[in-house]
Image 1 (cartoon, rainbow, N blue to C red):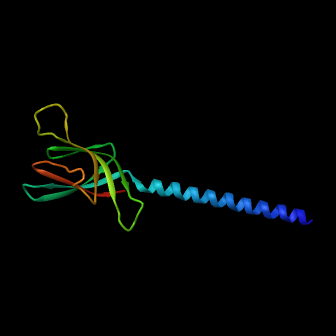
Image 2: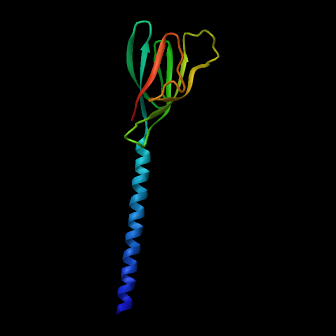
Image 3: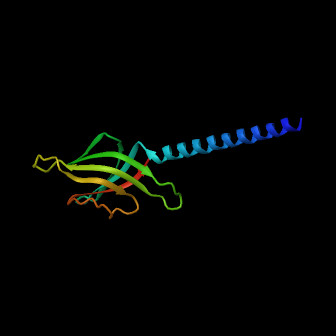
Length: 133
């Protein structure tokens, strides 16, 4: 009889351990999926008129804004709430350029807290990252 009680305790502890690991792994997977978004918000500043506009970019879709063609490929929020960081992979083409080489004005990762790491350099427009969701 004592032997059966010990086996029952071991089974209960094992079941508890498996359940704990499953819930822990499941919460980590949902957390990482919450970090990636499907929509990127950027602000575009027209340096000549001093007007800015908020654009919502759905990933993979090309958005036209005046002379710019803007496409967001991916965005991600940081894991840390105390120092939030938003990153997005953005491609920008200048449509006023008569050279038909389809060269990007900007093609790379943009960072919300440090826009100077990979600066967007255009004589008329300035772009910065606002949000990812």
